[in-house]
Image (cartoon, rainbow, N blue to C red):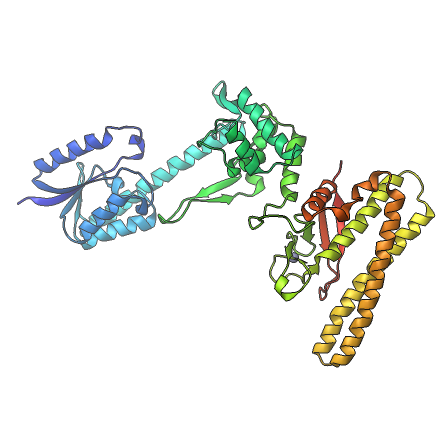
Amino acid sequence: MDMTAAVYLRKSRAEEGDPDALHRHRETLLAFAQEHQMAVAEIFEEIVSGESLYLRPQMLRLLEGVQEGRFEAVLCMDIDRLGRGDMASQGIILDSFRSAACKIVTPRRVYDLSNEMDETYSEFEAFMARQEYKMIVRRMRRGVMAAAREGAHVTEVPFGYVRAWEGKRPTLALHPEEASWVQTAFSLYTGQGQGCQKIADLFNAAQVPAKKSAQWSRTSIWKMLHNPVYTGTWLYNRSKWQKRKKPEDKNKSIPRPPEEWICMENAFPAIVSKEQFQLTQELFQSRSHSPSHAGRRKNPLAGLVYCGLCGAKMQRQHQESKGIAPCLRCPTRGCSPSVPLEQVEQAVLLALTHHLAGLQTAGAPPEPKEGVLIGAAESLEKELVRLESQKARLHDFLEREIYTPEVFAQRRSILEAREKEIKEQLGQLCQREEKKEAPSGASVLEGYAALDAEQKNQLLKTLIRRIDLIRPSPVSSRSFSISITLRGF
Ligand SMILES: [Zn+2]
């Protein structure tokens, strides 16, 4: 009596480029079935060749059939076509065949997994197939790494270049037209302050041919402006791919530690200078790319202020409904209390004015008057900070019922009056300084108050690289001081 069988067809790794392989196997297996009195009930042909079981839909259908007992045998070219994959996949496949007492038949031999000896054998052989595959992958990777270490360009050719060869070693040569577009993108970003989306729109309008897709996107421009290859640097092995385990997952890129990177300067012809590339990266750091940002900017300090405790970029927060003035808030949960935006802005302006005054008089001995002014401003500033923490303590006293509400209100109004007084004095000091400095360098800050938040932000970013918000420890109140890093022009 004929044995009911299914035929499972799948290319081996070596046959991947061979379009006729599956057709040939089908003929061989059907002839074999006829010779051995087997009735072929169904043919499963795997088109895709994924490693994971979930990426092999035909195998899943076949296993269903095996589990339902529809086949007494499954016919395939050799056993590793069934078993290739990870250990979990192997286990599922072997279990299905064993529990259904379904034989695996190859032209070389028949495997009966319900037979103890055979099971060991097939497990062993499947395991070997897997090991062999892993070894091939490892060997290939070793070869690629060795070539990459010698400066071979083993990845895709980036926009701006064409593939060139130095003997057997792949390298890059300039694609003059594309290279000039790369330069354009960099200078639009650094010189004219255009964002990635605007540059992409411009490229599309100019019908610059994109490499991988029909259109330029914000992301492809972003990637271009971050790619060190354009300074001629060969950077490789920065991350590895983790394969997805389930069809609904995505492959993940996992960064490797810097000591594993391959980095070689001047490996290829450069399209932009190292200085311009560096400036681009710094601008990316300083410009805020918050996706939630829509419409007009409201924070003059956007993208500039970092939390001195955790290093995160501070964000503007404004709960208009609660009637609280806008604050700068550390996005790290529970890190530090927020501080009033206006206070930080004032401190920044004050420090900046001092700094610019310092730049102007650098080399010449400082005028005593100016020194006094700066000293006065500094002590006023310190007092402001102190008042702020005193105010915070008032609340604490009220909560702990050390103060009655009446005493609390009285103390608070005294503190607030003093605060107002100091702010006025500070304002006068600033004005006096600005007047004095008006004709020269410090005039960049002239008219600052008349600007809108967006313009203020742009002005500050041309002068300041970053602002660190330093908090006294323990961080109990809103008191702070700032440390400004200026741009080095
Ligand atoms: Zn923080």
